[in-house]
Image (cartoon, rainbow, N blue to C red; front, side, top):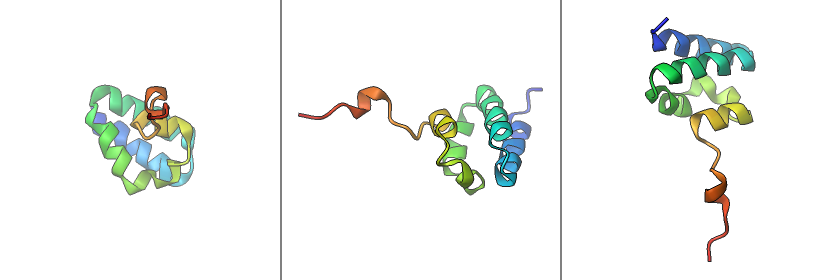
Length: 73
């Protein structure tokens, strides 16, 4: 239950097979066990299929926070 790399591998496999829900769920578990997985997933081609998914983008930090979106003077 504490093996983050297993959840990460499951997430990647689900991503490549098109099962977005299972991919995100397993990636959330992997990240909760090891926050470095957030960075790995952001740069992993196995997750390319999920880049357009808001839930994935929010999870790995691809979407800017609302404070980042405010106009600059």
